Image 1: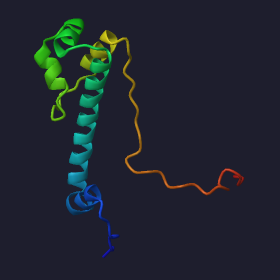
Image 2: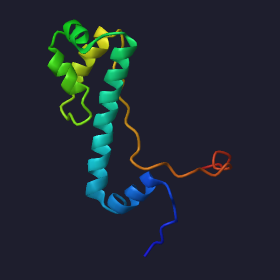
Image 3: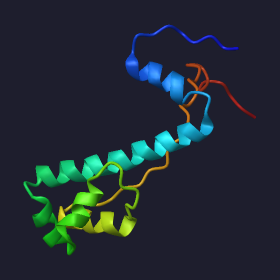
Length: 117
């Protein structure tokens, strides 16, 4: 059994207790983080533009209640089409990245110097 390092970091303690070693919980957690990140980004862009939800909705061609749902961290229905409409209304573009699930292993400082056949 692997020993956990002692910590007083509440987030780390919660992670160790409820997520670590539980792939289904980790998957759910990562999905929630992604939904939250999208919602926060929409709120940040809208407020930076000085727009109310109603004003953004009018620019996007939807209702204020739809914008409200999109800005809710618990909302799971973000569509690429709607994100593109919001981006266009705010003179932005949507960019999608695929990143590794796990942190890459540190490379040896000499790994780029070794030759390969």
